[in-house]
Length: 395
Image (cartoon, rainbow, N blue to C red; front, side, top):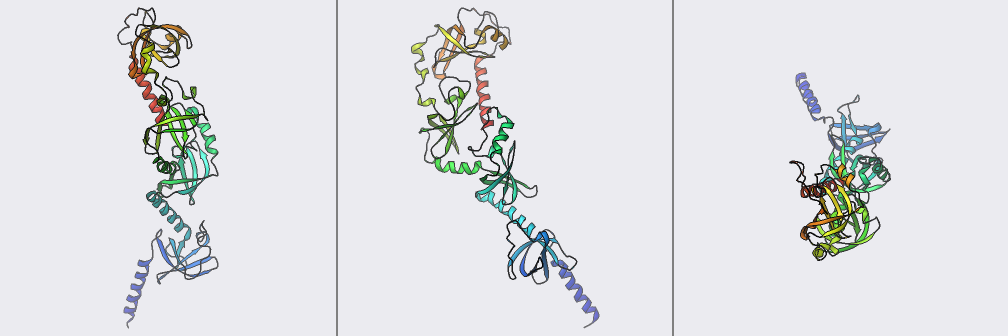
Protein backbone atom coordinates (compact mmCIF):
# COMPACT_ATOMS: atom_id res chain seq x y z
CA UNK A 1 0.00 0.00 0.00
CA UNK A 2 1.47 3.33 -1.03
CA UNK A 3 2.09 6.20 1.35
CA UNK A 4 -0.22 8.35 -0.77
CA UNK A 5 -3.09 5.84 -0.36
CA UNK A 6 -2.53 5.65 3.40
CA UNK A 7 -2.60 9.44 3.66
CA UNK A 8 -5.83 9.60 1.63
CA UNK A 9 -7.47 6.96 3.85
CA UNK A 10 -6.42 8.85 6.99
CA UNK A 11 -7.75 12.11 5.56
CA UNK A 12 -11.08 10.41 4.82
CA UNK A 13 -11.28 9.00 8.37
CA UNK A 14 -10.40 12.39 9.81
CA UNK A 15 -13.06 14.05 7.68
CA UNK A 16 -15.64 11.43 8.76
CA UNK A 17 -14.66 12.02 12.39
CA UNK A 18 -15.22 15.77 12.27
CA UNK A 19 -18.38 15.29 10.20
CA UNK A 20 -19.84 13.06 12.91
CA UNK A 21 -19.00 15.43 15.77
CA UNK A 22 -22.33 16.69 17.12
CA UNK A 23 -22.83 20.45 17.12
CA UNK A 24 -22.82 22.49 20.31
CA UNK A 25 -26.29 22.68 21.80
CA UNK A 26 -27.57 19.43 20.33
CA UNK A 27 -28.92 16.58 22.45
CA UNK A 28 -27.06 13.27 22.14
CA UNK A 29 -27.62 9.81 23.60
CA UNK A 30 -25.18 7.06 24.45
CA UNK A 31 -24.05 4.40 26.92
CA UNK A 32 -22.10 5.04 30.09
CA UNK A 33 -18.66 3.42 29.88
CA UNK A 34 -17.14 4.65 33.14
CA UNK A 35 -17.97 6.62 36.28
CA UNK A 36 -14.91 7.71 38.24
CA UNK A 37 -13.05 10.71 39.64
CA UNK A 38 -16.10 12.96 39.41
CA UNK A 39 -16.58 12.33 35.68
CA UNK A 40 -18.88 10.22 33.56
CA UNK A 41 -17.66 9.01 30.17
CA UNK A 42 -20.23 8.11 27.53
CA UNK A 43 -19.82 6.17 24.28
CA UNK A 44 -21.52 8.18 21.51
CA UNK A 45 -21.86 5.62 18.74
CA UNK A 46 -18.41 4.00 18.86
CA UNK A 47 -16.48 6.84 17.22
CA UNK A 48 -16.72 9.59 19.82
CA UNK A 49 -16.44 9.60 23.60
CA UNK A 50 -18.27 12.25 25.60
CA UNK A 51 -17.48 13.37 29.11
CA UNK A 52 -19.64 14.99 31.78
CA UNK A 53 -17.84 16.57 34.71
CA UNK A 54 -17.95 19.35 37.26
CA UNK A 55 -21.16 21.37 37.61
CA UNK A 56 -22.52 19.81 34.41
CA UNK A 57 -22.63 16.40 36.10
CA UNK A 58 -25.52 17.03 38.48
CA UNK A 59 -29.15 17.97 37.98
CA UNK A 60 -31.60 19.27 40.58
CA UNK A 61 -33.57 16.02 40.40
CA UNK A 62 -30.51 13.89 41.31
CA UNK A 63 -31.43 11.83 38.26
CA UNK A 64 -27.74 11.20 37.52
CA UNK A 65 -26.47 10.58 41.05
CA UNK A 66 -26.28 6.77 40.75
CA UNK A 67 -25.16 6.08 37.20
CA UNK A 68 -23.23 2.92 36.36
CA UNK A 69 -21.58 1.50 33.23
CA UNK A 70 -24.15 0.27 30.73
CA UNK A 71 -26.80 2.88 31.58
CA UNK A 72 -28.39 4.70 28.65
CA UNK A 73 -28.34 8.47 29.07
CA UNK A 74 -28.95 11.74 27.24
CA UNK A 75 -26.80 14.84 27.46
CA UNK A 76 -26.26 18.18 25.70
CA UNK A 77 -23.07 19.08 23.81
CA UNK A 78 -21.36 22.14 25.26
CA UNK A 79 -17.98 21.73 23.49
CA UNK A 80 -17.24 19.58 20.42
CA UNK A 81 -13.71 18.59 21.49
CA UNK A 82 -11.68 19.36 24.59
CA UNK A 83 -7.95 19.17 25.23
CA UNK A 84 -8.17 15.37 25.51
CA UNK A 85 -10.13 14.90 22.30
CA UNK A 86 -13.38 14.15 24.12
CA UNK A 87 -16.73 15.87 23.57
CA UNK A 88 -17.78 17.95 26.59
CA UNK A 89 -21.34 17.21 27.64
CA UNK A 90 -23.83 18.48 30.20
CA UNK A 91 -26.54 16.64 32.09
CA UNK A 92 -27.69 19.96 33.58
CA UNK A 93 -28.46 21.55 30.22
CA UNK A 94 -30.06 18.34 28.93
CA UNK A 95 -32.30 18.18 32.00
CA UNK A 96 -33.24 21.82 31.52
CA UNK A 97 -34.16 21.17 27.90
CA UNK A 98 -36.28 18.14 28.79
CA UNK A 99 -38.09 20.17 31.44
CA UNK A 100 -39.03 22.87 28.92
CA UNK A 101 -40.13 20.17 26.47
CA UNK A 102 -42.38 18.68 29.20
CA UNK A 103 -43.79 22.11 30.02
CA UNK A 104 -44.67 22.70 26.36
CA UNK A 105 -46.37 19.29 26.23
CA UNK A 106 -48.44 20.27 29.28
CA UNK A 107 -50.04 23.09 27.27
CA UNK A 108 -51.40 20.47 24.86
CA UNK A 109 -52.36 17.81 27.41
CA UNK A 110 -53.76 20.18 30.05
CA UNK A 111 -52.32 18.08 32.86
CA UNK A 112 -52.26 19.77 36.27
CA UNK A 113 -48.88 20.36 37.98
CA UNK A 114 -47.65 21.77 41.30
CA UNK A 115 -46.39 25.34 41.56
CA UNK A 116 -44.50 26.47 44.67
CA UNK A 117 -45.09 30.18 45.42
CA UNK A 118 -41.75 31.88 46.10
CA UNK A 119 -42.61 35.57 45.90
CA UNK A 120 -45.51 38.00 45.38
CA UNK A 121 -45.74 41.31 43.57
CA UNK A 122 -48.65 43.61 42.77
CA UNK A 123 -49.27 41.82 39.48
CA UNK A 124 -49.30 38.23 40.73
CA UNK A 125 -47.16 35.39 42.09
CA UNK A 126 -43.67 34.17 41.22
CA UNK A 127 -43.63 30.36 41.33
CA UNK A 128 -41.36 27.38 40.65
CA UNK A 129 -42.71 24.67 38.36
CA UNK A 130 -40.47 21.61 37.94
CA UNK A 131 -37.47 23.75 38.76
CA UNK A 132 -38.35 26.50 36.26
CA UNK A 133 -39.37 30.00 37.43
CA UNK A 134 -42.90 30.94 36.37
CA UNK A 135 -45.61 33.51 36.97
CA UNK A 136 -49.31 33.45 37.91
CA UNK A 137 -51.01 36.76 37.02
CA UNK A 138 -53.62 37.94 39.54
CA UNK A 139 -56.31 37.33 36.91
CA UNK A 140 -55.32 33.64 36.78
CA UNK A 141 -55.84 32.92 40.48
CA UNK A 142 -58.76 30.77 41.62
CA UNK A 143 -61.60 32.68 43.36
CA UNK A 144 -60.54 31.52 46.83
CA UNK A 145 -57.10 33.13 46.35
CA UNK A 146 -58.15 36.14 44.24
CA UNK A 147 -57.50 39.35 46.22
CA UNK A 148 -60.89 41.08 46.22
CA UNK A 149 -59.85 44.43 47.58
CA UNK A 150 -62.36 47.33 47.63
CA UNK A 151 -61.21 50.08 45.30
CA UNK A 152 -58.40 47.93 43.88
CA UNK A 153 -55.78 49.29 46.32
CA UNK A 154 -52.52 47.78 44.99
CA UNK A 155 -50.81 47.80 48.39
CA UNK A 156 -53.66 45.84 49.96
CA UNK A 157 -53.66 43.49 46.97
CA UNK A 158 -49.97 42.81 47.59
CA UNK A 159 -50.68 42.12 51.28
CA UNK A 160 -53.24 39.50 50.28
CA UNK A 161 -50.92 37.90 47.73
CA UNK A 162 -48.02 37.68 50.19
CA UNK A 163 -50.12 35.35 52.34
CA UNK A 164 -49.75 32.74 49.57
CA UNK A 165 -45.93 32.68 49.65
CA UNK A 166 -44.54 29.17 50.38
CA UNK A 167 -47.85 27.54 49.48
CA UNK A 168 -48.10 24.97 46.69
CA UNK A 169 -50.88 25.58 44.17
CA UNK A 170 -52.32 23.32 41.50
CA UNK A 171 -51.89 24.98 38.08
CA UNK A 172 -52.07 24.49 34.34
CA UNK A 173 -49.46 25.77 31.90
CA UNK A 174 -50.71 28.56 29.61
CA UNK A 175 -47.44 29.60 27.95
CA UNK A 176 -43.93 28.08 27.92
CA UNK A 177 -41.46 30.15 25.91
CA UNK A 178 -37.97 28.71 26.42
CA UNK A 179 -36.25 31.35 24.29
CA UNK A 180 -37.57 34.19 26.45
CA UNK A 181 -37.49 32.04 29.63
CA UNK A 182 -41.18 32.89 30.11
CA UNK A 183 -43.52 30.48 31.87
CA UNK A 184 -47.12 31.53 32.58
CA UNK A 185 -49.39 29.23 34.58
CA UNK A 186 -52.99 29.41 35.80
CA UNK A 187 -54.67 28.27 39.00
CA UNK A 188 -57.98 29.59 37.66
CA UNK A 189 -57.89 27.08 34.77
CA UNK A 190 -57.78 24.17 37.25
CA UNK A 191 -60.68 25.67 39.20
CA UNK A 192 -62.68 26.21 36.00
CA UNK A 193 -62.29 22.55 35.00
CA UNK A 194 -63.55 21.44 38.41
CA UNK A 195 -66.37 23.98 38.19
CA UNK A 196 -67.46 22.71 34.76
CA UNK A 197 -67.71 19.14 36.01
CA UNK A 198 -69.87 20.09 38.99
CA UNK A 199 -71.98 22.51 36.93
CA UNK A 200 -73.46 19.60 35.00
CA UNK A 201 -75.72 19.10 38.03
CA UNK A 202 -77.29 22.56 37.58
CA UNK A 203 -79.43 24.32 34.99
CA UNK A 204 -80.80 27.82 34.46
CA UNK A 205 -83.75 28.42 36.76
CA UNK A 206 -82.42 26.30 39.64
CA UNK A 207 -82.60 27.87 43.10
CA UNK A 208 -79.44 27.56 45.23
CA UNK A 209 -78.62 28.54 48.78
CA UNK A 210 -75.22 29.61 50.03
CA UNK A 211 -73.08 32.20 51.77
CA UNK A 212 -71.93 35.60 50.53
CA UNK A 213 -68.17 35.15 50.08
CA UNK A 214 -67.15 38.55 48.67
CA UNK A 215 -68.61 41.96 47.89
CA UNK A 216 -67.44 44.34 45.15
CA UNK A 217 -68.78 47.56 43.65
CA UNK A 218 -70.44 45.62 40.81
CA UNK A 219 -72.02 42.82 42.82
CA UNK A 220 -71.67 40.05 45.39
CA UNK A 221 -70.29 36.51 45.10
CA UNK A 222 -72.25 33.58 46.50
CA UNK A 223 -70.49 30.34 47.41
CA UNK A 224 -72.74 27.28 47.24
CA UNK A 225 -72.79 23.55 46.49
CA UNK A 226 -69.46 21.79 46.04
CA UNK A 227 -67.25 24.87 46.30
CA UNK A 228 -69.04 26.65 43.44
CA UNK A 229 -69.19 30.42 43.30
CA UNK A 230 -71.53 32.66 41.32
CA UNK A 231 -71.95 36.39 40.79
CA UNK A 232 -75.05 38.30 41.85
CA UNK A 233 -74.79 41.52 39.86
CA UNK A 234 -75.76 44.70 41.72
CA UNK A 235 -78.83 44.98 39.47
CA UNK A 236 -79.96 41.47 40.51
CA UNK A 237 -79.78 41.89 44.29
CA UNK A 238 -83.03 43.79 44.90
CA UNK A 239 -85.64 45.43 42.70
CA UNK A 240 -84.70 48.88 43.97
CA UNK A 241 -81.73 50.84 42.67
CA UNK A 242 -78.83 50.67 45.17
CA UNK A 243 -75.49 52.47 45.25
CA UNK A 244 -73.42 49.51 46.46
CA UNK A 245 -74.12 45.84 47.29
CA UNK A 246 -72.86 46.46 50.85
CA UNK A 247 -76.00 48.58 51.38
CA UNK A 248 -77.96 45.31 51.37
CA UNK A 249 -75.51 42.45 51.95
CA UNK A 250 -72.50 41.60 54.06
CA UNK A 251 -69.94 38.78 53.88
CA UNK A 252 -71.25 35.68 55.63
CA UNK A 253 -74.93 36.33 54.90
CA UNK A 254 -76.90 33.17 54.08
CA UNK A 255 -79.12 33.83 51.05
CA UNK A 256 -81.04 32.08 48.29
CA UNK A 257 -80.59 32.93 44.61
CA UNK A 258 -81.72 31.72 41.22
CA UNK A 259 -79.35 30.68 38.43
CA UNK A 260 -80.05 33.01 35.48
CA UNK A 261 -77.08 32.17 33.23
CA UNK A 262 -74.31 29.56 32.90
CA UNK A 263 -71.48 30.79 30.68
CA UNK A 264 -68.76 28.14 30.50
CA UNK A 265 -67.49 28.06 34.11
CA UNK A 266 -69.15 31.34 35.11
CA UNK A 267 -72.39 31.34 37.07
CA UNK A 268 -74.73 34.32 37.18
CA UNK A 269 -77.35 34.52 39.92
CA UNK A 270 -80.30 36.65 40.94
CA UNK A 271 -81.77 37.26 44.38
CA UNK A 272 -84.45 39.69 43.31
CA UNK A 273 -86.16 37.19 40.98
CA UNK A 274 -87.11 35.16 44.04
CA UNK A 275 -88.94 38.22 45.40
CA UNK A 276 -92.24 39.71 44.24
CA UNK A 277 -91.66 42.52 41.77
CA UNK A 278 -93.22 45.63 43.37
CA UNK A 279 -93.42 47.28 39.94
CA UNK A 280 -96.11 44.80 38.86
CA UNK A 281 -98.60 46.49 41.20
CA UNK A 282 -97.13 50.02 41.21
CA UNK A 283 -100.23 51.46 39.53
CA UNK A 284 -102.36 50.19 42.41
CA UNK A 285 -100.60 52.74 44.62
CA UNK A 286 -99.45 55.57 42.36
CA UNK A 287 -101.06 57.47 39.50
CA UNK A 288 -99.81 60.02 37.01
CA UNK A 289 -100.28 63.65 38.20
CA UNK A 290 -100.34 62.45 41.82
CA UNK A 291 -98.39 64.57 44.33
CA UNK A 292 -96.18 62.42 46.58
CA UNK A 293 -93.83 63.13 49.48
CA UNK A 294 -90.46 61.65 48.37
CA UNK A 295 -87.09 61.28 50.07
CA UNK A 296 -84.12 62.43 47.99
CA UNK A 297 -81.91 59.37 47.73
CA UNK A 298 -79.10 60.55 45.45
CA UNK A 299 -78.03 63.67 43.57
CA UNK A 300 -76.72 62.97 40.08
CA UNK A 301 -75.49 65.33 37.30
CA UNK A 302 -78.71 64.55 35.41
CA UNK A 303 -81.17 64.96 38.30
CA UNK A 304 -82.43 63.45 41.56
CA UNK A 305 -83.01 59.81 42.43
CA UNK A 306 -85.89 59.77 44.93
CA UNK A 307 -87.73 57.19 47.03
CA UNK A 308 -91.51 57.13 46.92
CA UNK A 309 -91.37 54.22 49.39
CA UNK A 310 -88.99 51.38 50.26
CA UNK A 311 -89.78 49.54 47.01
CA UNK A 312 -90.45 52.20 44.39
CA UNK A 313 -87.79 54.71 43.38
CA UNK A 314 -88.00 57.30 40.62
CA UNK A 315 -86.07 59.95 38.71
CA UNK A 316 -86.71 63.68 38.74
CA UNK A 317 -84.74 64.95 35.74
CA UNK A 318 -82.70 68.13 36.15
CA UNK A 319 -85.06 69.87 33.72
CA UNK A 320 -88.01 69.16 36.06
CA UNK A 321 -86.59 70.67 39.24
CA UNK A 322 -86.83 74.41 38.84
CA UNK A 323 -88.70 77.19 37.04
CA UNK A 324 -85.33 78.18 35.60
CA UNK A 325 -82.85 75.86 33.89
CA UNK A 326 -80.19 74.24 36.10
CA UNK A 327 -76.94 73.56 34.28
CA UNK A 328 -74.66 71.75 36.73
CA UNK A 329 -74.64 69.43 39.72
CA UNK A 330 -73.25 72.17 41.96
CA UNK A 331 -76.54 74.04 41.63
CA UNK A 332 -78.43 70.85 42.48
CA UNK A 333 -76.46 70.46 45.71
CA UNK A 334 -77.27 74.06 46.61
CA UNK A 335 -81.01 73.50 46.10
CA UNK A 336 -81.43 69.94 47.40
CA UNK A 337 -79.95 67.64 50.07
CA UNK A 338 -79.77 63.84 50.30
CA UNK A 339 -82.26 62.62 52.91
CA UNK A 340 -84.50 65.66 52.48
CA UNK A 341 -88.25 65.10 51.94
CA UNK A 342 -89.85 67.13 49.14
CA UNK A 343 -93.14 67.00 47.25
CA UNK A 344 -92.98 65.69 43.68
CA UNK A 345 -95.56 65.22 40.96
CA UNK A 346 -95.59 61.87 39.13
CA UNK A 347 -95.29 62.54 35.39
CA UNK A 348 -94.85 59.02 33.93
CA UNK A 349 -95.08 55.42 35.16
CA UNK A 350 -93.64 52.59 33.02
CA UNK A 351 -93.85 49.35 35.09
CA UNK A 352 -92.32 47.15 32.37
CA UNK A 353 -89.14 49.25 32.45
CA UNK A 354 -89.19 49.87 36.21
CA UNK A 355 -89.22 53.56 35.44
CA UNK A 356 -91.08 56.42 37.09
CA UNK A 357 -90.54 60.07 36.17
CA UNK A 358 -91.26 62.99 38.48
CA UNK A 359 -91.31 66.78 38.60
CA UNK A 360 -90.80 68.98 41.63
CA UNK A 361 -94.32 69.94 42.71
CA UNK A 362 -95.49 73.47 41.94
CA UNK A 363 -92.92 74.46 39.31
CA UNK A 364 -93.63 75.90 35.88
CA UNK A 365 -90.40 75.19 34.09
CA UNK A 366 -88.90 77.28 31.32
CA UNK A 367 -87.39 75.57 28.31
CA UNK A 368 -83.59 75.39 28.75
CA UNK A 369 -81.29 77.01 26.25
CA UNK A 370 -80.45 74.96 23.18
CA UNK A 371 -77.72 72.43 23.81
CA UNK A 372 -77.99 72.52 27.61
CA UNK A 373 -80.73 69.99 28.32
CA UNK A 374 -79.47 66.45 29.03
CA UNK A 375 -81.52 63.39 28.29
CA UNK A 376 -82.22 61.24 31.39
CA UNK A 377 -82.52 57.98 29.49
CA UNK A 378 -79.09 58.49 27.89
CA UNK A 379 -77.59 59.25 31.30
CA UNK A 380 -79.01 56.04 32.74
CA UNK A 381 -77.64 54.06 29.78
CA UNK A 382 -74.23 55.61 30.40
CA UNK A 383 -74.33 54.54 34.04
CA UNK A 384 -75.26 50.96 33.14
CA UNK A 385 -72.42 50.85 30.58
CA UNK A 386 -69.99 52.09 33.22
CA UNK A 387 -71.17 49.41 35.68
CA UNK A 388 -70.69 46.73 33.04
CA UNK A 389 -67.14 47.94 32.33
CA UNK A 390 -66.31 47.91 36.06
CA UNK A 391 -67.67 44.38 36.38
CA UNK A 392 -65.58 43.14 33.45
CA UNK A 393 -62.35 44.75 34.74
CA UNK A 394 -62.71 43.44 38.31
CA UNK A 395 -63.95 39.92 37.56
